[in-house]
Image (tube, rainbow, N blue to C red):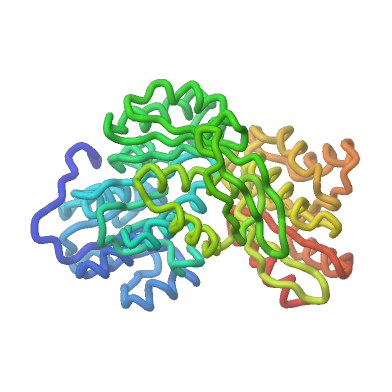
Length: 474
């Protein structure tokens, strides 16, 4: 059995092999390691674009599927992604050959964070956007940060940047590290500065209740050194309580004036959102951004809190926010044809679904909003949020929910019901529709759309490429 406490980085590493290389974080790490001069290879099940194309562009060889034969050219180090199970044939071969190994978070800690100050972005929502924005602000300030995020930054055109300066910005996930290390990933990231955006129940496949979630974040808070910084969302009551346990300096942010950094006024002008930030109750600056939605303004407040605390000039922060183009699959405007706007978003938690719909409706108040939601994440396919989802779609004009195609992996007694959600929405007066599969859903969408509509797709997966299939059919 693999033992996470015995993992040490061997000397003279040249060849690094990555199991599960096509994961978002793993592929980013592969790109950084390749740029640092390592020979990188790896494997995954059915690699597909865009990640496979990205790795091919870096000349990183990928084995399609897992096999003990993939390790015949014995690497110096193996990095194991958290999708890998203990009975994987490559794991068994790794043990047989006694090849040194690290989990993905351990590899980041040992290969990238040594002699750097890490800025860890954690929380149930907003991690990816906040990570990419902070990295962009640091880049504009000339600090040459490294970063790894769970999505593609539209400014960097990548989900990573090669570190050349003091800071490394890392998205801190509370999901478990690996099959041999069930601790949250973010406990490996040696946090100097930490943002926690929210604490809510999620990841129902590995956490029993909100209490276990709180314990994991409490562990992260306690890792921040006295000379470090905790930035937390004051509008989350759990975070307000947990922040008192930090030995580091704490800065709060939120949309209420009681926060250290706050926003009181938000308005739209043409294609931009304007908002005025207050610091300790006094006017700080008026910013404008291409992004919209209160959740994105909150993310920007968090980023401003960090940038200001490390001494970045206010004008630099202003310009970085003005230029920030967001992240792929976060309120991502695919395009508009025949007067119909298609938007793609990663929202899957009930709170994220509600906030995303709210953002789009506030941005386009006079247009009919059709919300299409796929229950795909480990939590959304379980009935833990069955009733809560029925409260998330109030601002949508029409709601369409397909049957999840991945329910066979969930015990029958725990399964989420798309049909029941639609019934509950109808009882609340919402025009909702159930579909047995995505093909029928797409056909129905095409038939019912009219000029002026906004179609918002929400899924933690590809949604069978439905957003682009619909756009191409218009």
